[in-house]
Amino acid sequence: MTTSPALLIAGHGTRDEGGAEALRALVRVLGERHPDVPVAGGFFGVPSSPLPLGDAVDGLVERGATRLAVIPLLLAPTGPVPEALPAALERAAERHPGLGYACGAELGPHPKVLDVLERRLDEALGSGARRPEDRARTTVLLVGRGAADPYANAEVARAARLLWEGRGFAGVETAFVSQAAPDVPTGLDRCLALAAGARGPARIVVLPYFLFPGDLLERLHMQAEGWAAAHPGAEVFGAEAIGPAAEVAAVVMERYRATVAGDPLLSGAPCGDRAAAEDARETDGAPRRSTPLSTDNGER
Image (cartoon, rainbow, N blue to C red; front, side, top):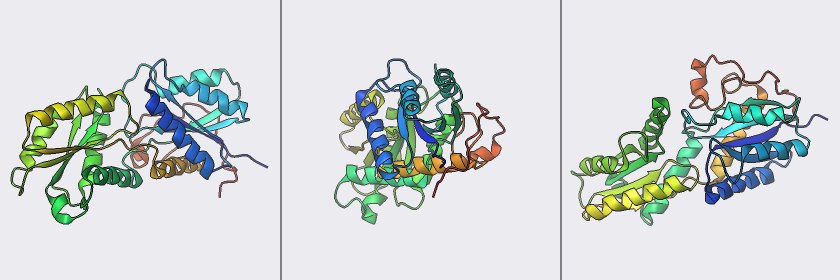
């Protein structure tokens, strides 16, 4: 009987225990829903993470895993980081000779992720959020973490466009917590200008394009609260991060299955270097590790 490759969820570094617990919750959800697939998760990119990626690899190997399907838990490429995902995986694999792995695409603005973002919007607005007249006077500021890589920042703009289409909001603007323009106050200024012709006070939802809570989310809340205090005529609502929602677990498993199956749009590209599955059509990178994942894995 051939066992399934293990699922390794690779989050971009955090030192925040709340973010680590959210990843643990996602791992638990996937483990309960797919007991035939060994699953673990950890963070790369920063030292002193409470949930290191290397520990997750070690744990999977101890459970008998010899092949890993690695899914970057990212909404956009990370851009340059002190410790990139391929380096973290190579270092972990050096401790386990014969261990094979392949990487899938990050999550990107998958439709299921957009569904969670819309739910976070509704939760922030409270009752009546889905009435057309309420949405028509609501502007959304989708806030990414920001990166030196313009392609990573462009992914936030792509998500904003997809979130706006067909949902009835007055508009969806973008901003970044750090490293990229526009910053959060400038993005809120744009939302205020966009709402100038609407009836009643401007209503803005600050929506973090973050998977998990952490220092960046706290910084975003502080920036938005400071702007709101200086603009008492505007209604500003703060939404929560996406979190370990069931939809996120479903997208991770979708990426896992495609990686194991050897889908050319998802496997064989450098880890963490592309925006989403459909963008892999323009990718010609070779696999970071030559050991393939067998497609004979008993997936149903």
